Image (cartoon, rainbow, N blue to C red):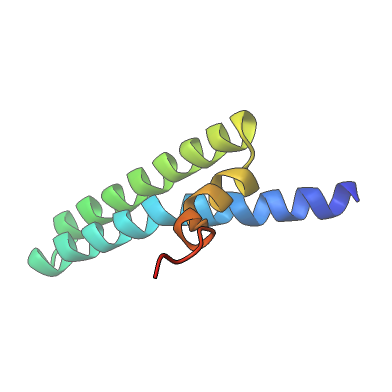
Length: 87
């Protein structure tokens, strides 16, 4: 049971980390497309790296405090669907 819990937490960690990393990749790609030379490439890689580092730090903090599965379930939960419809 311990292995299953670790795997689910690790998948949640990857999901949390992927969000800022994807934003960094997007912004870095836009910078590179705007300035297609080695300076633009360096800035784009730098922005993507910052997104990766922020994602790692954020996901690790969430894992240590609440747990990634708990965090993701709160984000994806829809409490308004649990209430009965008023007709």
